[in-house]
Structure formats: C-alpha cells, structure tokens
Amino acid sequence: MLVYRQDAETPSVAQLLDDVRDLLISARDRGEAPAQLVVSSHLYREVAQAKRREVQRGFGVRLFGLTLLAPDV
Amino acid sequence: MLTREENELLCRVGRDTPTGQLIRRYWIPALMSSELAPGGAPKRVRLLGEDLVAFRDTLGRVGLLDENCPHRGASLVLARNEGGESCGLRCLYHGWKIDVTGTVIETPAEPEEHAFKDRVRALSYAVREAGGLVWAYLGPAADEPRFMDFEFTTLPAVNVMVMKIRQDNNYAQSVEGVIDSAHSNYLHTNSIRPAAGPDVSVYKPDLLVDRPSNDGKPRIELRNTWYGFRYGAVRRPTVNADKNKYVRVTLWMAPFYAMFPAPVGWGNMQAMVPIDDEHTMFYYMKYRYDAPITAEERVQHEIWSGFQAGVDIDADFRKRIDRENTWLQDRPAMERGESYSGITGVNNEDVAVQESMGPVFDRTKEHLGTSDVAVIRMRRLMIDAARNLAENGTVPLGLDGGQTWSVLRAEEGTLPLDTPWEILSAYGDEPVAT
Image (cartoon, rainbow over all chains, first blue to last red; front, side, top):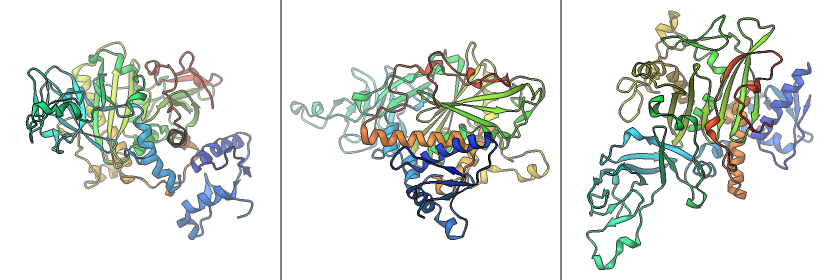
C-alpha cells in the first residue's frame, strides 16, 4: 500500500499523479507491488468526481491501477 | 487524467484564460517569413483565439496588427499594401493607412486640423524574424522577455527547413504526442525498425530508421530544468543488453516546444502553437548544424513526414487527410501486412491519433500509466505556471533567468549500464533537480 502525504493544502490531481508516479516507481524498484493508494478525502472526492461514470458502473476509484482509499470515505 | 477544471485550465487559451495569459508571455511563431512578400498581400493569422493580420511593407518590415481596422472594423486582410512616403496598409473602407507599428498615418476622410490620426492607434504586437519564422510577443509590453534563441534561429538559413501544418485539435494533445517516447515503438512501426549493430539510429537514404533497440517498454527518467524538463527514455539495446543501454533524450521547453533526437549532425524541433482552443499550427524545424540542407533532402523530409506542399497540404497549410476521410487510412494495406498504421507519413500518423482524440480531449476519461511520466509532468508544470502567474504574477517557466536556449540539443546514444543517462543533452551549468 502506498500513502500519499501531500505538502500543499489542496494539491491538484495533476500534482497527485506526478508525485504518486514517482512513489510507485520507487516501490517497484524495491521489489514491491502495491495495489492501493491512501489519499486525503479531498483528493479522493476529486478523482471520484472526475471518474463518476466508471464509479457508477462499479469500477472503483483508481489511479495507475491502484485502488484509492481515503480515511473517512 | 485531470479533473474537468484542470483540463479546462490546461486547454483553454483565449485572452482571458490563465493558460492563454501564460502563453502570451512567450515569443511564439506567428507564421513563416516566406509567407510575406514585401508589398504583398496581407495574411490572416489567428493566434490564441485572436484574429490578426500580418504583412510586410515595401521596406521589408513586418507588422502584426489586429485584423479589424481601428476605425470601423473592416478587415485589414483586404487592405492595400502601399509604399511611397510612408508605407503601410490602407484600409479599403475609408482609406485609413496604418504602418507596421500600428501608428495611424492617414485618416483621409477626417479634417486634417483635427489630427484625429494622432489620437488613435491600431493594436499591434511586437514581432521579430529568426530561423525562417516571424515570431510574435502578445503579452504586456512592459514584460517583453528576451528572445527564445533556439539553436535553429542562430544557423544560416540554408541549414534550416521549416514545415508547417494546421491540426484540428487542441495544442496540448500535440505537445503530449511529441514528448511521449513510448509511442514510437507502436505507431511508427512502418518507419522505425529495430536493428542490430548501430549505437544510434541510422537514417537510410529513404529516411526509414534503423533503431538499435526493440524494447517497447522504455524506462523514462525525467529531470526538471530551467526551461521545462528533459528526460531519458532508456531501452534495452538489440546488442549487448547485459552491458549497455540505449537512451533517447527528449526536451520539453515551456510552453509548447520540444526537441528529440535527429540523425547525426542534425537537430529536430517542434512547436505546437495554439490557433485557438480547437486548432493548432504545428511547426517542424529540421536543421543541420554544419552544412546546408540540399533541395533533394528537403523533398525527402517532406515526403517522410507526409507534409509535401501541393500534395499533402494546400497553400493554407491544411491537410488532405482529416477525420472525415479517416485520415485516408489504408485498411487493405494493413491486412496485407504492408503497413502497421495504414497511414502514410510519420507525422501524419501523429496527426491522425492526435486529431482522433477529439478537438479538446476530455482527460477525465484517461487511465495513465507510469510510462506517461513526461505527459504527467508537463501538465503539472503548465497548470502550476498558469495558476502562479494568475494568482501571484510569478514569472513563467524559463523566463526568469539569463540562460540561453541556443545550447539545447536532444541526443541519443548507447551507454554502458553504469553511466548516467544525464551525460547526454546536459549543458554546462544547467541545473538538474527532480
């Protein structure tokens, strides 16, 4: 599992993707195969809103194939 | 992917949009110098959603004005391009004459004693010519930056060729195409073939390319720079993969310029200039560092790209191929195994896939992979730059120092495994940060 710790108060999804891509590559270089990504509730909602057509069809909220999780969602 | 709001921010380039304001802070290509003859017809130019007119007066000076006459709005594309004591465009409607700086020289229907012409100006933009192009700066006059002196603008004219086509898609889709190394292993299979032996790509006389790698999964390693970023696409070579790696370096220079490796002794650069939200003028500069390009070579490159004037494109740089004719894709040739894409011309393959995404692609639909790192980084940098300029007046990327673009080149090479790829395309004091 990866955990995204954001520096900015309200990072953009563009920033999230850029940061998480590096986290994922680093994890894979260590031989890990994460399947989940923990993000803030704000980011979870942003991504879920953008992907609402898929969420409505039961696809789940995912980035880079990682299932997004949020503390209180 | 991007949220809908981020996508709009990235893609919309009108005068009152954040990214439109950002791009206006840079020097951008307006048209090719060869499109304007002294005393010749004015030419309509649409940049960032603005309708303008370009002309070359009888003294050879170039002007870029608002298309509408400042009097009552008739198009200056219809104007007479007059010489004489003072040169300029004479509007057909009431005879107002305007010079390249936008100064109104004559208002013949108005009493001279009113000196009306001294109290009116036509909107004009700063222009300069270099590298076979007319460049324009559309931002605030007080913030005019230093000129973006890419290497091709410093070479003799005979060493440079410029191709230009109009694409029916938003500029960002085109930029994302050129900074995406991975697609060349698939889309351009017709033209780029794996080969054993060479350390770098070999361009045959027919311009088909032998590449020293068959690796369709490049590892992309990216470094931010003062001008944007550069990345190394690292692939396993066809020979000695246990000792070496094959690296292709690509540069992205804000807001929409890119360089990628060319034949030895040559440079490649592309500019994806927004005409408006749904159209882009694509400029492709090829240049030889130390020798002229022959006439035969120019024709060869045009054929390879699919950009032959009079054959593939018309006088207004519109293509023969488009969505309506499915980019003239030859399905029978694909079925016979003669063509991977069915589309003729390397750059036409890019044009087809970029236009096929729609006029302004909805990036909420995407599922990006880790190989999309350059696309992801470019979007982040552009979105941040647009927001920072709008909210804080932050000087845009690349314009805040005294560096020169003229040293930038994109290289390729086969390196020992333990040699950092960064030794390719790194120049002097170029800062490197992740």
